Image (cartoon, rainbow, N blue to C red; front, top):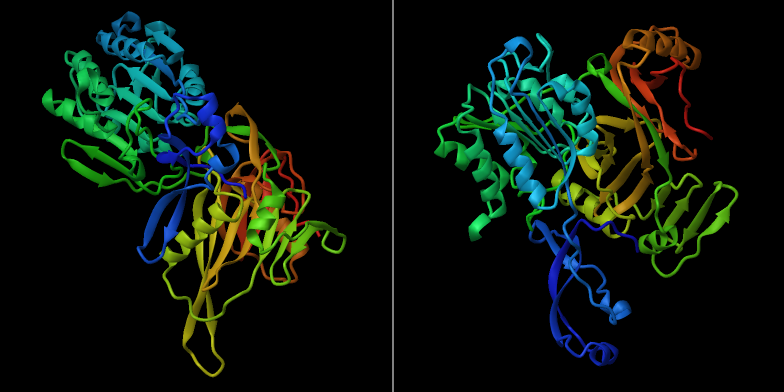
Length: 532
């Protein structure tokens, strides 16, 4: 069975291998080793617990396992203390140097290190795709802009819009984090922006940064502190108006390189909070349309790498064989009750036994069961998956107005820098949960192979896309009524589960009278409907 491991943990292994005892005489009979852990949902306790994945020592008992080393991370440093013709007051760049030196001594790599007149707008676009931490120091204004070296050259949050790799962003300026729109840079999976929402002092920056990093890494033998806590503690000591904008699910992050490390990436803007010296507030933000997007990607994809035989065996009983099925144009297997289909695109469909009794649980229970089903049986839950939708399946008995919920369809999707991958019967994982557990699963998930950044807006705007969609609507629908525009949204287009796909074009998803029509944002052409 195939899994994607989200965690590892220490367990006690009692060694009974004669070969190990002979070859490694100093290898103790009882030893703590690091093994992959799988989250399992316990309905009786209403929560998850971790258990070791099929203990590897039965097959690999002659090898010692070790906890993998923490991967080296990368930083970008930009700081502006001098300005052309002194159009802004001079500052000390010492905090940036301290930050860089500290992490460099920890073995971190430096992607960009630019100061004063050498800082350019391109630095921030490049850093977002190459650096785990981005650190900027300089002036900032109440309107959310900050100056570069050239006279009257200002940048804003849109100049950081693509943070595809960056997890932690330090904006060491005055005022900036009092402007809500700065939270938008977290939409692609960045965890935090640390800085200030009011005027802050240049005098204390050096001490604040040094002591903040010391608290994060437990220098001198002290207990390590979470990122948000360390920022609060050190700024409170120096009476600075500290601010952190975060995904609420990332508040328990420790610094990269510390044993506990970061929590899982969260994309989108639905859970953004701002924590300051005055308290915590929820920021209500709406995903922009492409008229607000200043860059996008040309995206190459490839078939998801799954062991389809193992997945099929995990979804059925016994050892059913995958065979070519000309009728369905797929490989199929069955155990007499359940069916599995594997398509040339890499898509998998599972059909079990549907239970139509009233579901004994809530929508939250269904989500947990679906997650466990995908992790344990359905090929693993991809790292970039997010919960997109939960749809109740309601039935009404004949002669009665009372409806009952017989289950839920739980849908997972993925995004590229906050822009959803969407299509007609395209990329998603859907699980139908009822009293039998997961009774149906649809899975097509194309892995991102490469991304090429494109600066600027796509050629086709929303007005042109709507006109193209309306024209197409009249061609395919058996109605003389004009369509009603219900929604417009920019996406990366995913073809249907029956089609092989190597690139994801940027597209407009236009919803007309309940019908989704996808228009290529580069060409204005209508993209494919499901292949028969």
